[in-house]
Image (tube, rainbow, N blue to C red; front, top):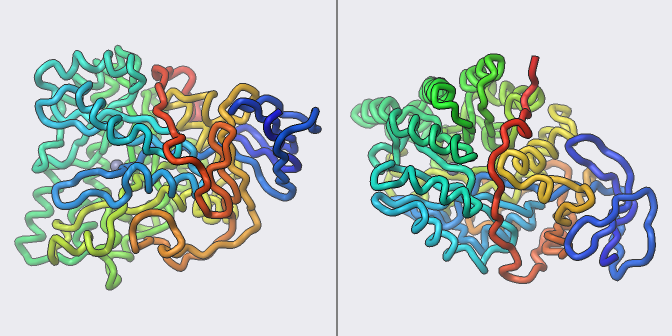
Length: 466
Ligand SMILES: [Zn+2]
């Protein structure tokens, strides 16, 4: 055996138990009540938890927006991920008007291959369906890109699709064995509300939230569900933030409609009060932060299984970038850092605060995204044969979040000063220790592109039925 991890509590989506884990050639080779034979390396996990590596299914490394590029490139952002216990990210292949999906995928892989510190996959954005785009979908599925992203907002940036295009993509992707991710905000409605506010001179950060009220999300989720059902598609709602949107997903589940949902730490931990502070613009993200009532609904949605995944929508900007565009909320680049802090924060505010069990955390942050995105059981599992993507986690150690000690390339953390417990002690990717005690120690570019399998909805019945 190359490595034994000894004395830890193994925490999986199904249960928790004491076991010694043997690792050979980058895979889990033994899960046993006692160490069998010697090993080149023995890691002591006494008093610690052993989790499957976290999968962050929604990140935006070096994302070029109109006014700024997100502050983490693939190298830096995945080093931050590794330090936070994340062993797989799924980022996005960016679709340019008029370009084929395959050309866009090639470009994005060129940017990431050889530079990532953790394993990565890509979802493919689709911003228009002209010029044979739909025919490119099955070819991308063959190349291991089995999920496609649509925006129901950002019309003025040329990224919004209309309902006809949404229907066509849902249908085609469903036939090809893929899943459609939808950014569910009603673009024309929020543009109208934004214009009204700006006309009245209401430009402060709090009006970012007013320009995108809960109903903007609720309507888009309901519409996406209806159209996906009609198209016999497989639908995944990214960054669900509202109690109304949650209810729509619940209703769809009772009707037997294939829809999955994710939410993010910022919607579970932060609320719209942040926009009223002097640093309000630093918190601008899309969708906006919501009310406490919404937060509590989202925690319940996770505990009940209506929401299957916690991802981060990691898209950091520096304070300077957030201020470049001037005074108006509408000019602030939208996004928050998250990939490095999600596990400790969700443990601390979820598990240690009795809102989720440890097993539910592992389900939402590792096993469910592995199943939904075609990576299970290679990822998201600690069974024999799975990749040895392992986190040794100290549930008692205390932390205080500080932007200065995080690896993400921004001088701002939305959780600055927040204290809690639950610290990542060690992160292992395919048998290799890549981060320890908050420091990256892996080789550069060890992460690889993940050729994901087709979506199998029957293997993904992750919500409560009956
Ligand atoms: Zn996003």
